[in-house]
Amino acid sequence: MTVAPSAFAQRTARAQSALTQAGLAAVLVPSSDPHLSEYLPERWQGRQWLSGFTGSMGTLVITQTEAALFADSRYWTQAENELAGSGIALVKIETGASIHHVQWLAERLSTGQTACVDAQVLSLAAHQQLQGALTQVGASLRTDIDLLAQIWPERADLPTAPIYEHDPQWAATPRTTKLAQVRAALTAQGASHHVISTVDDIAWLFNLRGSDVTYNPVFLAHALIDATRATLFIAAGKVPPALAMRLQAESIFIKDYAQAGPALAALPPNAVLLLDPRRVTLGLRNSVPQAVKVVEAINPSVFLKSRKSAEDAAHVRQAMAQDGAAMCAFYAWFEAAQGQERITELTIDERLSAERAKRPGFVGLSFSTIAGFNGNGAMPHYRATTEHHAVIEGNGLLLIDSGGQYLGGTTDITRVWPIGTPSAQQCRDYTRVLKGTLALSRTRFPVGTLSPMLDAIARQPLWEAGLDFSHGTGHGVGYFLNVHEGPQSISRALTEASMAMQPGMITSIEPGLYRVGQWGIRIENLVLNVPAPTQEQFGDFLAFETLTLCPIDTRCIDMSLLREDEIDWLNGYHATVRARLQPLVEGAALAWLLERTEPI
Image (cartoon, rainbow, N blue to C red; front, side, top):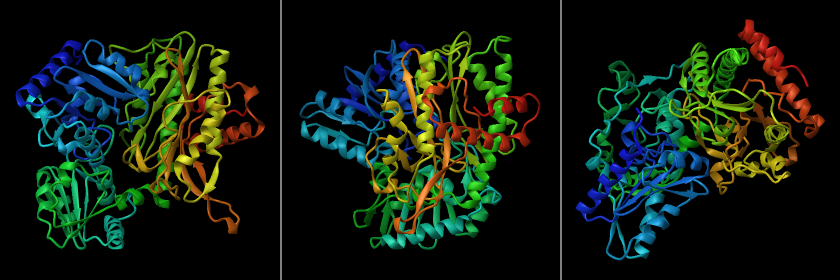
């Protein structure tokens, strides 16, 4: 249901009134929940409810007289459109890691004033930054107030959908084995207990799945692990009795979601608790008794789940083939229907999702489909709506970024297709982005290379022409889990030891180029880290196995910009796509596959 801009102005005014009544100067509303998730259950979509901005990242700050939303360059155009008429100012920041909202707030507060933020959704790092900045100007911070509880009468409750087991057919490593690996890591750290709040870590570790978060097959839970038992804190009624009995037989016990804090508060004084300061909120951290020693380190499960087993990789390859077959069927229809029926960006989402739903093992989409024609494609996180969408007609470029959740893997792919006759400049742009995808796809590198070090390889063909893109080049991908997963990130982020590339990791390669108001280009494949030939004295190397199976359009290529070795790689890729998908498609889909995989 569409909400008028005036409604968001009224909600902001409601928040400002609540601030005045409580004697508070400001409230900070992050895009966060008690698990510091990227995609939020409805209950914690307060920033969106207050502002109307639907992007997945952004921070809202409301004072008694002002309101500002802080968003990075991926969302600027979207935010300008969605905030129009709300009275909320857009503050443009360069990256999602910026803390400009902290500085902005500190500049508006003076000695004796108090800001508030809900500790249950605030990371430890964010609290430290915010507290430090306010202290410098003589202001204070309260974290025991959830202002949304006062002003949001129709706020959603906790999700109630049931939890289910990831079938051993797909989850080849038993949870007992995974728990043993985590416990070994605890012993190495000298810890007796470990608390986990990140929902994808918990889903992976216990081989359980749910549907509490749109597009991600996860469920809301905290976990507390010691040497002999594990406790999952989950809302009542979500775990079927038979599953609860199987878990209990493995010394995994279920308690109510609200008992996570009290359980930490009840830890014995001689306990040593391992927690990840980037993946636990201030609210949960405050539950830990002062007598308990805390070891701060990354969750062991972050590393363990990033390295897919040989069995996992085999299932992912099957899921990629099914996903590729679905796209063949869709694109065959799409090309035949152009000029014959009215096609919009919404039609693309509907038809592509329907084709995926026909494939074996399909569970749902892995994120909201991005179908952007011409200027809409220049917004990296664009989403068509019934109120705002384009008809696919005339000349230009159509960008489609989509993905699926399958029992055997998670997919994420972006392709760009010519509509009518693309211009010479569009073809040059397209080819330079393609060269970036090819350059990184063909790269070999030593095991343990920090993933941000690879970022420039994909950008170099664009940099040669004075071009660039503002988002990262690649993100980790889960195994029937979150489409965005760490610890690796191919981006311009600061390098950390946790970002080291290891065998079995699945990562996206997705350079892009965006001309605001004109067109956007992004060519994305998922790749698997696999051993590469090496010379003994130089250590072990890795290469990328391209997992994604779908033709890359060759009609937009400016052949004068491609080298012979790049052409060879593309032809080899298309030969693989043809061989892998041909047994899974027929009729028009097969004809389309054969045509689009012809060598160039």
